[in-house]
Image 1 (cartoon, rainbow, N blue to C red):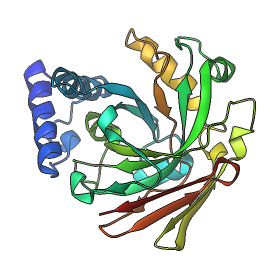
Image 2: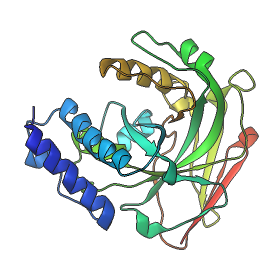
Image 3: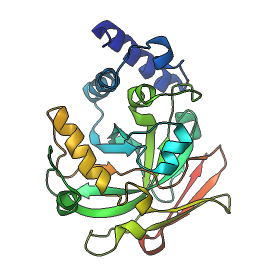
Image 4: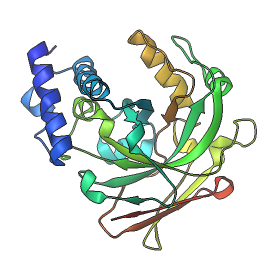
Length: 261
């Protein structure tokens, strides 16, 4: 376990990297004894400082929930981070690329909760009962730690590499559509780059919501009504640069478009 001074120092490094849109050396390489609990503690310091500065938490992101993402990163277990209100965009948005580091896009579904959800024995059925609706989403990745050789400690400490999300306009209740078969066809500047279906996320995209509720129970917390849960990507991340136009077709759940400026 890391000393609290080390946890505070790493959180400060990451906060500065976020402000400067820079990248720091891998935490796991510099602190080989750091644990997953340490990394959530680092993320928690950063989160609390942002809340104290006036940002509003609107939800959580779950990462590394699909085989595609685990193979792309070499990491074999899910993680989670926090999402603030000023990181939420609507379809059609122009997104300033300079706000982020190592900018990539992932294809996901997001869920809005109508009731609280709490572990330790939360199931997929429990999660579906707590969900108000599903909405298509693109996640903008924002990595402040050098990518080569990253471990789960690095990604969790860095708020699970979350930068922003772009939400679509179509809302579906879980009983209105088989969420497992929602497709995603992701294009950059008119050329298809990635495809997938939502079942690639743990067999059902809402399984991650149940996993998160159970994980939160270990920290003495629960998911609250009204929170947005970004459930994990069912494609590999796609790199984007200034000037790129991104479009994702989710079939019966509509289309998301955005442009990086």
